[in-house]
Image 1: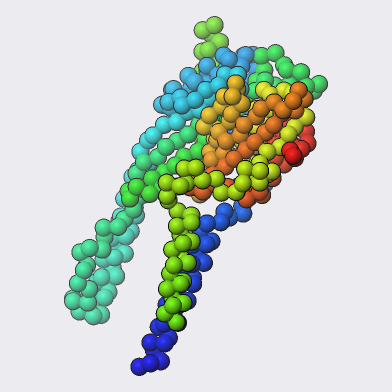
Image 2: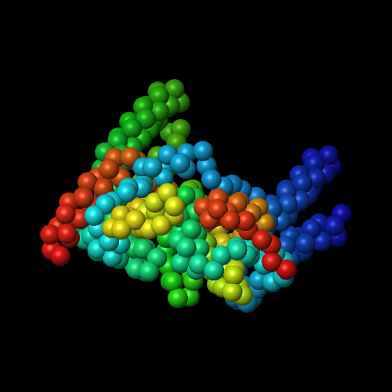
Length: 212
Length: 139
């Protein structure tokens, strides 16, 4: 009798030490590379940046606001003197294909397992069959954020070129699941999305220049 | 045995209280201001506030941040990076004498202040490249 209880005591001891260590570790900031330029940062920059001719910075910013509004964004912040616009929109993140697919696969899998165990062990092997399929978690809502930054293009001697701007847009999104937890927190790096934006922008710039 | 056991619990509790929620967090600043500034602050040899702010913004975009806020007059830029984690940074730019701009960054990751010098060093290295200027430590 005494041997198992001593073992249990030691186990508890170890568990406590582990807990304390965890708490201490939780307090320190993990050293990371979050502020380091990654190997694909140049590629991303090219994807997100365009040089735009024939428009001054303010008119370009106005054209950008137009595109953002077309896309259903609300403007959160703007600073014309630095060429900055920040916008966001909240949208559904329910991907019907994904959610239904998961549900079907899960329930098929479970049904198959149940049938197998029922056959092997008889009907009573698992009493709480009913409670099992409640915890399917899927993406519900997302916040998409965009920041657009313009700057005057410079010539080789560092002088500002007239009516030529460099524009860069960066996009990110936060996705919450059906339990209200953050499921994804990510930069948007899909080239298609950026191409779509710049397509829309060139049309908006055209309209902006027509209006003036 | 039992005494040690209790001691462990107390130590564990103390440690956990040392870092999680309490009203004390409002005015709590972790390290000393002098220590924080030693790695959060750098001076650049330029008097051009606008160019410095624009370089800060370009650097943040290079690092995959999306801006939250920018104010030229106050010289403030805030931005957030989402990459599995949420990293929020505020950078301030203000003149130091007639020939320098002082750049200070502070960041929080999730619900924790970033007080490790490395991310700040990385940030200033990236900013140096964007500004074509050396970041000087400030005494």
